[in-house]
Every structure is written in C-alpha cells, then in structure tokens.
Length: 166
Image (tube, rainbow, N blue to C red; front, side, top):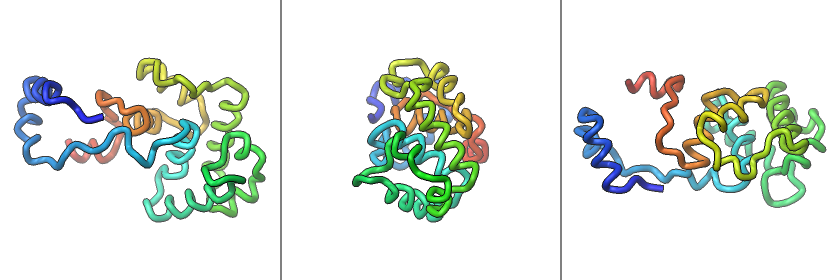
C-alpha cells in the first residue's frame, strides 16, 4: 500500500520540514511487508522471536522454529501448543519467548484473542487486544499495525530508532 500523490501532498502541507526531506528519501517501502504475509498468528510469533535480537540470530531461531511444524509453514497455534518446552528451547527460543508464544497460541486457540478480522478495529482497540498477551507490548502491537496491517498513521514514539531519528 503506497501513499497516493494526494496523501504525499497533504503530508507536505501539514509538515513542511518533512515535506522538504521527502525528495531526498528512498522510495516508500512496501507496506504491508511481503515477509509479514500469512496468518496473523505467524506474524505475531515472528515478531516475538525477533524482539531484542540481532537480525541474523533471530532469523536462525525463526528458521529452526519454523522447521518444527508438521507442514511446510510456520507452526499453527495448535501445533505450537503441542510442542514441548524442550523442543522450543532447543530451537533457540528463550524461556520468555517460549512463554510469550505459548500465551499467544493459548489465547488464539481458546478464542480469547480473535485474530481473524482484527484489522476491522481501530488502532487503540487492536493494541489493547494484543497487549493482553504476555510478551507483546505496545511497540510490538504498533509494528503489527504498520507492517502486517499496513496502517500508515501509527507513530511508535517508544521506538529507539524513531527517537534517535528525531
């Protein structure tokens, strides 16, 4: 979802400093991000795995967890719950990441967290729902909004990169 010319013009009008910088910026990235396609559970579990890890380390662990599936895709919530803590830990997940992914899977399977159609809600409601999962905070929920749901009007003020950039 790329912004339209009218949206860029409106942004330039609202923020002249950013508007002056836009011509010097690279092309607008693909949002939603192609690597985040697929079930919402998968995207959220991937986000948990990548939290606070170097990209290469996270990619290695993610690949190992993905191979724990009985099929060609990332494990479903039900498959994740059937895996032992030992197998998840052997794949490289820390105790906290294991706990977070299990809590996510448990809430999805029980229906406490309904991911189907979650994109129909406003940002605040989605953040409220996702942050009921142990290990998913406001930042992770905001990244889900931006990169999985393609929401262009989210400002992750707690993001270190955003803070340093400002």
